[in-house]
Each structure stands twice: as structure tokens, then as C-alpha cells.
Image 1 (tube, rainbow, N blue to C red):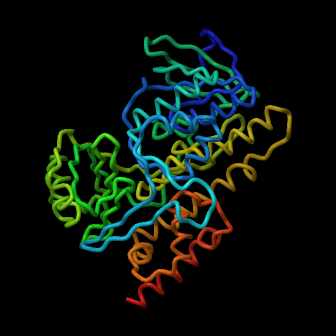
Image 2 (image 1 turned 180 degrees about the vertical axis):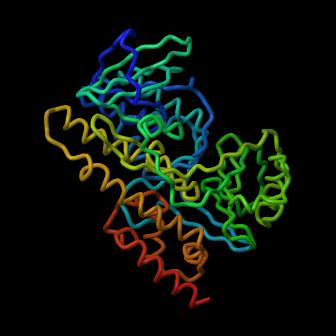
Image 3 (image 1 turned 90 degrees about the horizontal axis):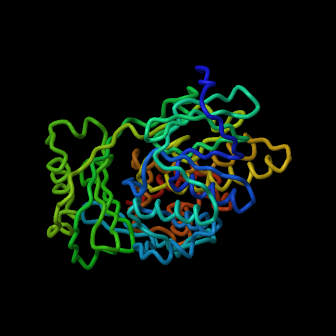
Length: 418
């Protein structure tokens, strides 16, 4: 770790949060509501584009905890009641209002530029200071008070000392990069090609109150998302491993359209769509770290670990980590002895590992066999619905508490009954 320039101005704060996205805004608001001094530094200027547009129901528990639910409800985002799945001509759906775990049923599908700015603005209204277009270029955690080296958009630089730093930088992964905390993900490298379209969907089977996840009719490790918004547009993407893109058009728009034409349900419902936005590519997004915390810092959300977009778990994990970290940090700043490993890292990982079970099961097709099974018992569907709604920490749910064993047994039963 390089020594920091001692000639720069030095500012003193209690808590510094890196990143003003959902995890940063939620953590900032929660800590401010507990009476703490909070500064958020954000590298970009909001609003800015981001994916992760289909929220899970559990997200709203943390939005509500941070005092932002009323503002989100008033923002006219697309209501989301659940998830639908299509494979060839097969179709099934899960309603998050009919689930095993108590909590929010309905949630929203959001254009993240608007949603993230709303949360950040709400945090500011509660007294959190946010400085946009400022980035962290170095960090020193060798002393009792961490010191960050910040650079403004105009090129000027300064230092900040804080009692604690929360990294909510998402894919920027600021502290993992600066502190050599990055670790390889256990997931294969996959790529997503995606865009926004004016969907013009008039198919009666399509439910705008649900995300539609489509399995490629032949290549079951290839899947698509269709996320409708309230303005007549939708987010559309395909996820596949690198070899699945071989031989396909290099032009991203043509590549995505070719994939869509191979899925009968998407070909049908998107027949009138206006493709008016250039497609984008993101790859190698799965990430992990050696530790979720250290002396003077903790990592939130995607800054720590990102699994896969298939069940839209990213924002939920981010917000859950914010709520948990804010509670532990409040106690620490109040003079209590805390254990970040047992009170934050271990319980957070339990839910992440539950999601991991079902993500892995999706790609090895065991969970797909469960999803598309036509004779599932209602109570089991309600337990699965809870996990799809984000309640992956509810260990009263057998498919959370014993996720791997239960999924394996259930998949075998579904396969044996075909």
C-alpha cells in the first residue's frame, strides 16, 4: 500500500461510504437515522445507467427501513408481483404474494437511472451528504482511523479520515482493488448482451407485472430476461457462456436479435417491438473477495460478491448487506464490542449461499426441472416463491435451511415423474 500524500487538505468524518447506489444510499440513510455523520462519495453523476432492473420483494423491506418506501411507491414504477418462466411452449409463473415467508409480496421493475437517483435524493433529504464525481484513488487502513485519498472531477485532491468506511461501489469494487481483496469467482465466465426497446407487446399471455425469464429451447444454459417498465418499454437481454456466442454476429444488435428469434415465445411477444437503443455487452461480472470486512471497513453488495443476474438477487443482497452493516456499525460507533465476522459476514453469506445453490441449479438444469415441473405441490411452490422473492435468509423455509439437499431430492422427484 503506497503512502498517501501528506501535503493535501485533510477532512475528518465519522462514516464514509464509497458509492451512492442502492446499497450506499440505504446504508447512509440508516446510519443518519441513528444520528451518525455520513458522507457518500460517488464517482459518477446521477442519474446514470445501470442494470439490475427487476427488484425482489425483500428489497422493499430495506427501502421501508430506510424511510424511503413512500417515495418509491409514489414514483410510478412498474409493479412486479412475481416471475414467469418460458421454455419453448412451456410457461409457468410464481406469484410473490403467495409465498411461505412473511414480508412484502409486490415490488417494482425500475429503470435504475431513475430508481438509484430517487434513493440517493431521499438519503440527502434525510441529511446524508453526497459528493458526486469524486473517486477514491488510494486508501490507507494501517492506522486507527482509515484515510482515503479522493480526487474531484476538476482534478483537485484531498484526504478524508473516518472512523469507518463502507464500500458500496458495486462493480467498481474500489476497496477490493486497492487492498488486494479480490478473489476468483467459482462461476464460469458468462456474457450478457442487452438493450432497452419499445416493446409494443399485445400478447395476452404476457404479464407486465412479472419478469419473464426464458430458457433457450435447445441450449438450456442460455437464458433471456424480459423486464417490462411502466412506460411501454422493456429491458431485454440474453446470458450465455463465451462459446455460445461463437459463430454469431459481432454486431451486438444483430447478435441479440438472432438469439431472440430462436426462442418461440420471445419471437411471438416481441414481433412488433421497436429496437431503438444500441445493445450493450457485459462479461465476467461474477466476482468474489477474500474477506467481507477488515479493520476499519466492510464491503457491501456487488463490491463484495456478485453471483449471476438470473434471479435478480444483486440489489437484494446489496440492500441486505447495507442493513446488516449499518446495524453492526451503529453499535460499534456507540462503544460496543462487535464481531464483524459472526454478526455480518457469516449471516450474510448464508443467504448468498442459498442464492448460489439455486443459481448453480439453474445452470445444471436441476432447478429448471423444478421450475418447469407441472405437478408441483402448492406448499413447495410457496417455499420456492419465497426464495425467488428474495427471502433467502429465512431458515424456517426448508428450501433455505437445507437448500442443496432439498433441491437435489426435489429435482430427482420432478425428473422421475416426467
